[in-house]
Length: 193
Image (tube, rainbow, N blue to C red; front, side, top):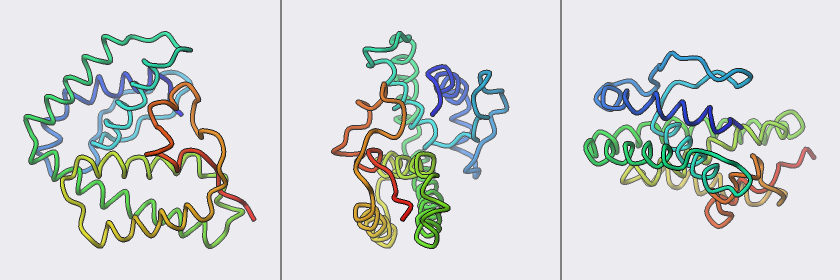
């Protein structure tokens, strides 16, 4: 998973673009800046990615094993909250649109896993971020359609049945930002059977 610096820069660069993004028809917004050395390229900005970066930063800030910039992170979170409040209707619409897109991608991965456990089980640590994005977006979208809710519930039922309980799939330092009660899918792995 990305470092503190990676997420911090993403949120710092994304927030000034947020108004234009929310008022556009685009779901994936290019930011066009390089990732820190040794890190993966940045994805295009979406609400989900901003919210995930914010949540991971909160994990880094509150970790006893890292030294970070709590005041700077708090300021970025406050700015994100202000944009959410100012553009609430556009925010909810964009969150619902992204939820639908992420739901399809998560379903695609789980279907690929069902078709070939061996080939896809090792991708879980990366792919599960889509499930985290769905949780974050569901909180923001206002109302999720009944068919989408039913699909997600069905996928969660399947995942609970096959997930091998285990340790946190990302950096242990940020695990407290993703408690097992809410983010149970981040604590385990898929069997290769």
